[in-house]
Image (cartoon, rainbow, N blue to C red; front, top):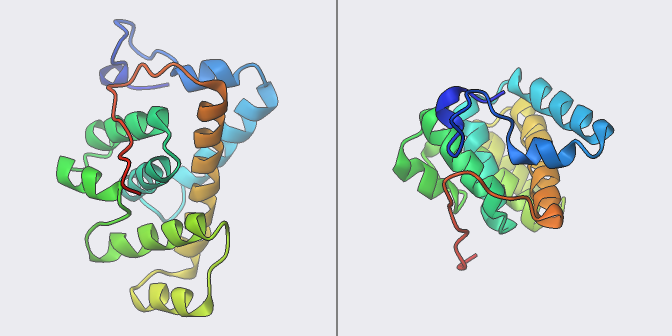
Length: 167
């Protein structure tokens, strides 16, 4: 459930996001989405970084729903400042956060492929193996929600953030 301050078009605290409502057509999908999301929330990548990863993936996939949702959650729950949220759209950030963002972006743009040189560069930037694994998990989760929302044309009740056209 979302905290009351994140129910942008609802006066009812804890409203269910439209993504979950539409996903409810398949209880198996909702169960899988919640399980992966829950597991990753307990991992080594903190919420502010996970939100940036979600924003970068949503921007890459032109998913307005996810871009809007994660920008709002990033600002109000993960407390990421507006400039950092904007930079995340281009998979950019401060020194340590930039490395997982770049790895996720490389994996997404390479359709799962990376080379040893890129992995060595991420390790040199301080990205541990557990973080690399969770970057892949978060990318999978974000691809799931991006593709689902694009396919379902989920109604976006979040404050709208439109994907840029430059990527």
